[in-house]
Amino acid sequence: MKIYAITAVSSLVLALSACSSEDAGNATDADSLLTDDWEVIQEAAQGQEVNMYMWGGNDNINNYLDEWVAPRLKEQHGVELNRVPMNDAQDIINQLLDEKTAGKTDGSMDIVWINGENFKAAKDNGLLWGDFTGQLPNFNDYVDAAAPEVSEDFGEPVEGLEAPWGKAQFVFVHDKAQDETPPKSMDELADWVKEHPGQFTYPAPPDFTGSAFVRHVLYETTGGHEQYAQPAAEIEDLEQRLEPMWQYLNSIEPYLWREGETYPESLAKQDQLFASGEIEMTMSYDPALAASEVLKGRFPESTRTYLLDGGTLANTHFLSIPFNASDKAGALVAINELMSPAAQTAKLSPENWGDLTALDLEKLSPEEQQAMNEVDLGEATVSIEELEQNRLPELSSDYIDIIEKGWAEHVAKE
Image 1 (spheres, rainbow, N blue to C red):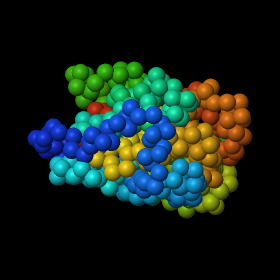
Image 2: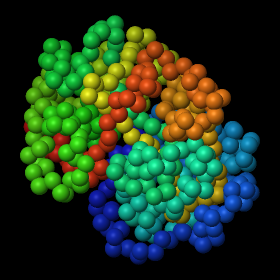
Image 3: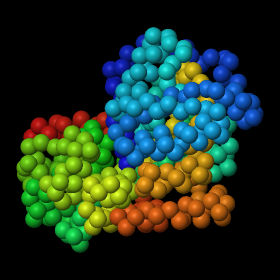
């Protein structure tokens, strides 16, 4: 699923390093919330309006927040949730960088939806408030804080600066009526593409989903993910190791949609091509995307998702509180509610969103487990058990920029 983070702007990061090291906006009167009792935080949150800045390109996600979450948050906690759509998470980071540079202490953002490169950029530049997750009852009760997918975000230690909201896992999407045996490895895909010219493509990096597809090619063509566990700077022959990936991508390019002369600029464009029948496959970081699109009548009822035999990339997406958030108590209460079993169960339904839960199922009560198990994920969706058994780790964020710039140089320009 997208999360929907793209890239952080290196020049801004470098420019910020010359600025004051003081965390403007980290008001002392709000810092006490990091140690206050939860009852005190709830009382302070009453009447606050929380602005949640997030990627706004998915109607299901937007409707879930506006129609399911916001009314309950207002009724049960007296907190008003105001969703502020952004084109992508990079815009959030850029705005926070500008506000910090300008010394703005009363920011407009109270909650931000980020992960990956954007989290690292925010963390490195002091754009996040503090270690707050231990204050959240639902984090303490329902989350395994030591789990790697919670304690790290694309290899970067989280250190309590963001709370897990959901999990994503890459899936391929095809029409079962067109092909009952889709390719389940990169070797099989290369053969399939050549046998079905014009019927496959992928979003151009730095689109998050397109970039992830390229990383799958990297894993399969260079001998697996284990060799990339160390920082990119420590691999002296990294450029040579990446070469088989570029060779593979260039070998299939002439057989892609429009002969690889152009690529969809976003996953939304890719999905439109699939919906209109121009291509036979699409892909997503959202395992329930196909089910949601079938419900809306955009994808054929015979649409199915599947995984590669070697597994697919999986990650967690998070919610955080900016350094200069104006309503931090309200933000804490809102994030805690978004992590509640009820909200996570509603989020799991493809009718609302279809996003995998961030909670540890073993920590739920039998009744809460049953409620999640009874959610109908639709025929198009791979089972949660199969997803969990075929998860691959993400690369640390230092690799992402190298790969995306390399794609522009070695694939797009050739």
